[in-house]
Image (tube, rainbow, N blue to C red; front, side):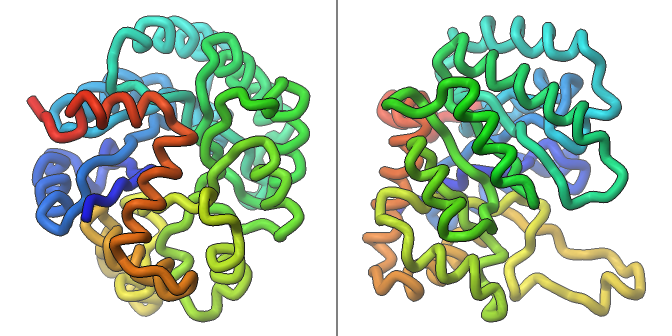
Amino acid sequence: MAWIDTHAHLDAVEFEGQAIEVVARARRVGVAGGVIPAVERRHFETVQQLAHRCGWAYALGIHPLYVEQAQDEDLQALHAAVAQALADPRFVGIGEIGLDFFVPGLDRERQQRFYAAQLRIARAFDLPVILHVRKSQDALLAGLRRAGFGSGRPAGIAHAFNGSAQQAQGFIDLGFALGFGGAMTFERALNIRRLAADVPETVPVLETDAPDIPPVWLYRPRQTQTGAPLTPNAPEHLPRIAQTLAELRGWSLSRTASQTTANAFRVLPRLSQAWAAGFLSQAR
């Protein structure tokens, strides 16, 4: 069985100097590849280089939590970087972009402006998007509709989705997949688990969001309270996360692997092309 981690930040400081080893451990348990989304301009080149070194794919974008330190020139740089990356078979789309209405004190108007601008870049190049969705589902959907998503055009992934069934249907109607990861492994995550079980089979994709969103077996609240080092989440945990999805849906592990991989390829067509060409098994 081959698994695809559709969202892992291998450029995070927790993996500094260890990304190749992290990917090697994941490959040993069947994670054949994945996507490294950028979060800010200075990481554009980093994620591209990591994708080539590790045999993964990557996306380019400015994360909503990095918008306040970003400059308007960064949007111009993103447009230029995307235009150049189109020649790179490992480049799959625009991300991680979106809106975060959970963290207090963030400038929502500035987030909205950067989000709209990045959606326009995605539409200009006919590329899918990887969306950060936190307490912002309705605003994200409104932006997607204004930008002309839907009607068979490339959509993307609503990463770490935790909205209502109605909001989930809004993204599904526009052609999006929904990302499920470590949060799904907690028995008290009733809404996420219900969504994972009930959405159409063509919708769920798997992700770790490494090094963040740890699954239940890595969660250590006592470490959080004492300030002790936390064990970072990593792509090697994806098959065990996938087992939760399989149990929730009544699927075999082999069906879970094949279906979630097919779903990822549907919403990220360039990822499918990279896989078919063998790029996700080739590192340099």
